[in-house]
Length: 87
Image 1 (spheres, rainbow, N blue to C red):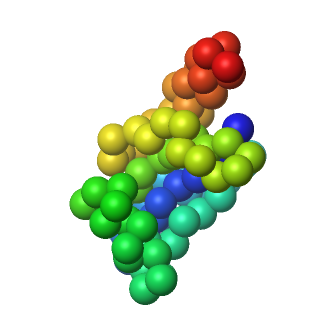
Image 2: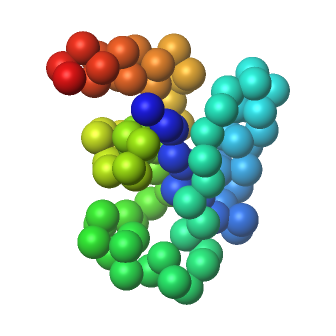
């Protein structure tokens, strides 16, 4: 499972959150909400606020999407473990 964070370069909450994750060495992918080609997908996901943390599988299917906000790495990892148990 992979953690994907939907964020924007102009989002101060995103910037601070990503800095904290980087300091902890937490691995994640960025989904750039500023990229015009992503607009349709963001609309489909109904993204209205940032950051949004998603847990995706290897085929990039969204397995879980947290409501917009910042979450501890412990909480994210616990959700990943829960999803793995459901397989």
